[in-house]
Length: 125
Image (cartoon, rainbow, N blue to C red; front, side, top):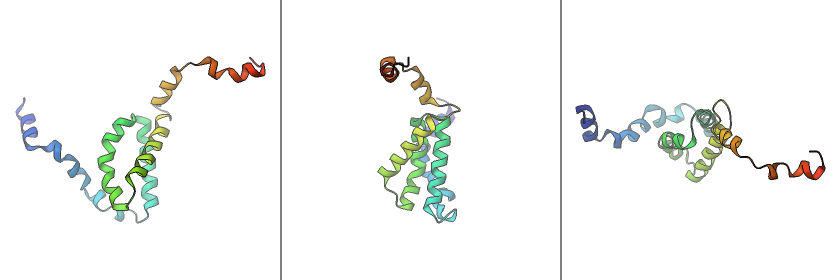
């Protein structure tokens, strides 16, 4: 191990990292940004959709959940509701270009019997 990595592991910076970036002035004083929880929620929704356009959902959960936990506590939002809202926003983001991770998966699914039953029943095909 290099001296730097040894020092980092000994000082347990990795274990204290969530405390450091969730106690910043923005997250400690979010009500100074806006008193309206709907404005904060709208900004979070837009941010999650944009992040979903660029990354996969698991990576976004790992990055943003520790950051959003103090916001949830500050505004009194239910964690289950917030998780569902986050999942829906990320699902919308992952099917939206420019990256559209889920569209790559969906384009590889080929089920002709299921997708062509209506044209066959109507005699169109």
